[in-house]
Structures are given as C-alpha cells and as structure tokens.
Length: 271
DNA sequence: AAAAGCCCCTGGATGC
DNA sequence: TGCATCCAGGGGCTTT
Image (cartoon, rainbow, N blue to C red; front, side):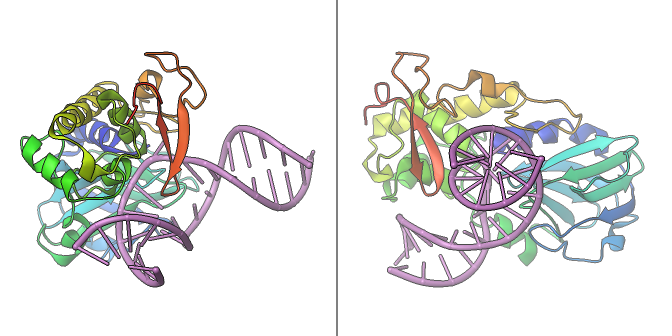
C-alpha cells in the first residue's frame, strides 16, 4: 500500500491536526524493523512542529530532534481524539495533547526511528541514498535521463530501487511504464531521450493523480482520518493479469522481476 | 560499482 | 475442516 501517494495522503490528513501538539505519552508494542533509538519516555514533553515527507518516509519534526516513520508493506497511521485499546498489530502510540497517533502494521516491516537531527547518523542511514523527489522542482529531465543511462538493469527495477527517483513502488512503476509505453524489462540505459521524457511525465502524472484519488487501498490502507483511497479503480495494468487492456483490449501480461510482479500490455508497450 | 537473491513478518486466497 | 503453498503495497544486507 504505502508508496509515495499513500504516504503523502497520510501526511496531508495528519499534518495540520498534529502540528503544535505536546507529547504526553508513548506506548510501544512489538518490535518494528529497527529500534526507536532512545528510551521512549524521553519523547514525553516534546512538541510536534510539523510533518514532512521524504520518499516513503514521514518526518515528524519535534522541537528537539525528529521521528522518522516508515509504513513498510502493511502499515497505516491513524490520528484520533480517542483511541480504542491497542490491537494485536498496533505497535506504536504517540499520545499527544491533540490526539493519539497510532501505527498499525501487521507485517512489521515499518519503522519508527528517532534522530537528534537530519544530519545525525540515524537519519542519514535511512535518508542518505534516496533519489530525487518526483513531485518536487528538482526532478529535471536531464538528471532523470542521466540516472537511467548509467543503469543497465531493467527500467522497472531501477524505478523501484529509489536511488534515481524516490517514491515509485510496485503499483505506480507498472502504471507509469504503461502511460509511457515502455516495457518494464527494457534496460534503463537503452532508453532514448524522447522516451525518458515520456516516462518523466508519466511518473509525475500517475503519482499526482494517485494523491488526488486518496492513494490506493488494495487491502486495508487508510489515511490518518481512516479514509480509504480509490486509485486502484483507475489502474490500467496493475493486478489486471489476463484482463483486457483498457486502451487496446490485448490481455494484460504479468511477469516476475526481482521477486515482484510486473504488469504490462504487450501491444501498448512493445519495447 | 552494480545487480541479483535472501530475508524480515503476518494474513488472505487457493488447492488438496 | 485442516493443512500446505504461494503471494502481497518495501527495502536493507549479503553475495556474486
């Protein structure tokens, strides 16, 4: 669930409501991907200044330090005035003066990590190698094409790797390649300037449209207000193996790349 | 240096 | 009904 659009939708549904809140308590459940990095109770008394996003990370800026939150494969956040008793998969609660922020994550691939600052080792380890923000002003065609040209792996896997451009996960990689008419198996280094241009536009377009649709709710994603997304209804190829292409009617194909599924239309994406 | 595999974990769908 | 197998939105780490 949580690719860039889902993380951004979560941020949008949370930032205004939690900004200015004082942390009054912390509850931790089962271990997540990494330890918090400081005794949880030391967060009490600090104030949440705001919420930013970098790639698929949410950054909770505190008056001293920051919390890096990642939703992994199955995580979602809720922010409510009152929270019911913690369920089996509620692994982190931040009790604040303005509501309770709760991370639910059945598979526990997610993380909550404290860093004293953005340049601290704990933050650099997670954020240091991230690529360009696709919806930001720094996402230029020149840099994007240059990033693709120096990689010989399949373009789908280069998009997923996140070191050229961040935030594109398994759903939106397939969707963007469809919009650009590029086959996911094409080596990134062989993409022409013209096709890089198409892919550059497609990545921005599909991510922006997904944010506008509230993200994709395949199983159980919801934003911090508990609202589901509906971009999955607009998907052109993702999870549509065997179904007719929405443009030309050819059955959508599914293949495996790096133990992940890729979807494409053999007619609309000839190479 | 870059690419390919493996692994973390739980739950839902499918098949026998 | 029970049990085994496969698959799922991510990505760090180890091995080639």
